[in-house]
Image: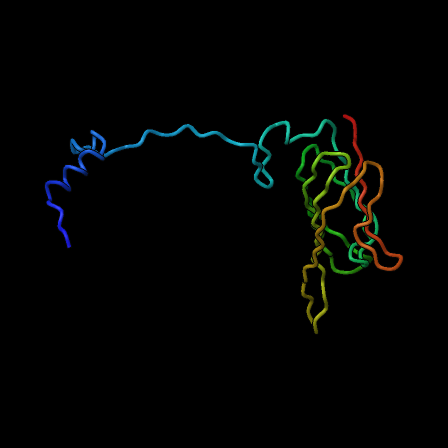
Length: 166
């Protein structure tokens, strides 16, 4: 095995290192300019253009949530993200808590990514427990036309999107 003289090794390292490091100063690389692309993080619009629509959008859910709970409510949104938590209560029973959230993408038709959940009371022995049920889907919606999100027999849950002028 051949050995390299220490003086040769130091000479090679000295020619490779920047001047500031040779003088006992640590080498600091100047910052590189960074550019931001058009990537959008979920729920965080990149620009004002991406965060608002030319008109408000009204989303209406009609029908029976999970085939059990009569539902008829609307959400008004001027941007891509919407959410609502509301009490739903069938006649005389413990309250059911409903949760609706999603993202709307502009286009022809609009694309609506929606999550619908319900916290439902379930009788267990002498007490009531709440259990969560969730439905998630992405659908294309033409303004003014109903889209069926869930169907069982004659029970349906439908979504309607309307453009609401200011």
